[in-house]
Image 1 (tube, rainbow over the protein chains, first blue to last red):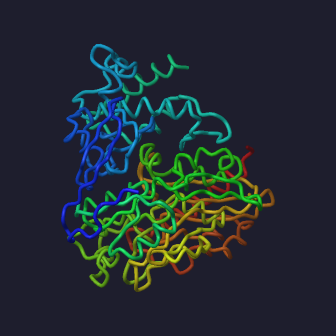
Image 2: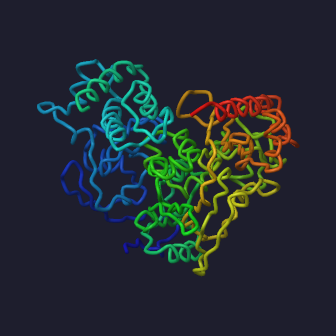
Image 3: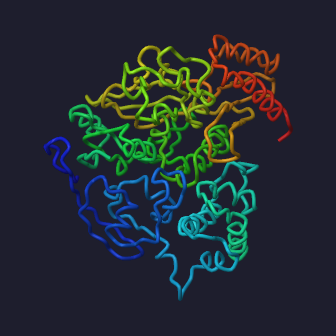
Length: 183
Length: 318
């Protein structure tokens, strides 16, 4: 059991150690307990691909994969991720070796300003994984059957990622292409 | 965010004892609601107890044919569970009607039950709010009230309970299982779990200080057609104006719980005897004593119409 000093004077900054893997690399940090996973990635590990949009879990710009599951990195404390495996946009692919979803976003022009794009891509990769893993959604017709990667399913499942430029239809096309390849 | 000390819980009972003994301590699991509120300094815990390493993330059959859902089961895993989908469909439907994929991957079953209201006056720290600062007044009364509650309200608070999951849990007669700081356990029927505001809107649940939810138990399945219908301002990722969870039997009898209209999942068992007479009769009984504002009185008609749609869905061949 790890325990920070409960006897700290009230209001004093409390530090705690945490160790996790980011994009396959072990990271050992000692952080102010208030540090979100998003701030740990951006400010302490200089992985600025993951973006801070609303910082309240509403926009999806900070979406990363933790043990393969997509979450909002702004709404989780870094110290709660001991031994977790975190994948950010930098870990999905590189300019020379793009992830198929990154390549599809470029091909279909799935972005304009690009700010929401890392979150969109991480989310899109995870959405196809969730359909594959038989997770139902609000638009799934029959709960006892597997959901398909239909346009309605992809749209509903991406509703936690906001794009102010409005690249939604091209994001959908990119996802449709990758879903078709993996089907 | 205010500074806080942090520890990882080792057992549920130890976590409950710590929460009762350390001043201003809070549990954290998914964190999707608590951290949001901590950033706004609406919640300002001095000590955080991380529950996520506890062994409370399983869904198991109970000996009486029901289901026990661990407190830490995520919304996603709850909605995706095979038995929940087949035998408690209204619950699966309600869960996927809420939040976003990312949030459901983190948010937990117990956390969903104790999430705070999304009343804009609760969130705006420049405004008085009897939930946030007891005795300071309610800025929502006389304010912008379109989203707010129409029944079960008091002169101190008109906030709604924002949960979709809890509405289905209420229709299913779930039981909330807890451990207290002294190590004893108890089971709280979902009907008694959420409190109406009365003069103490800051007291939202039946939980005693330090008491920790360990699981939610569902009785054995009751069959019937399960429907959850949510009416909201967007097609996805928005809180309910009105939602209806219903389980309708082939003979027309059934259960109805309503969300988006009250400080707790709203179910009046006596109203269900009106089901053979249709949505209007049920809604009239269900909403008896409602105190809407001019801005949210539309919710009364909307309950009736949503229920009518739900009953039509329930009658339609599968």
